[in-house]
Image (cartoon, rainbow, N blue to C red; front, top):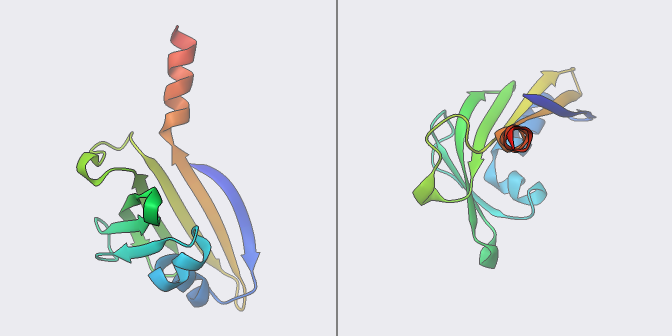
Length: 122
């Protein structure tokens, strides 16, 4: 995982957790997409509907309430990646700081490593 950014949020951890896991809140910060979750547990499916631009999907990997939430993003439900080297994993880590929360975003985008491998081998 590559750590992308940390931010300290002036809100308690429960409010930040709701902001990253509840569809009504996700729609406010994730490109205003309509958002659905079939089950908020590992293996659950998330759908981000972008109107005429189509739908993006994500498979939930980790749910540790108020601590960790991660999912693997992919473009086509019919061709969902079935191996761990496909897609991009987004992982949100929350650290309770009392009336504030440290939110860390981590990403594992294997595409960049595959491009590197191809470019260096040719």
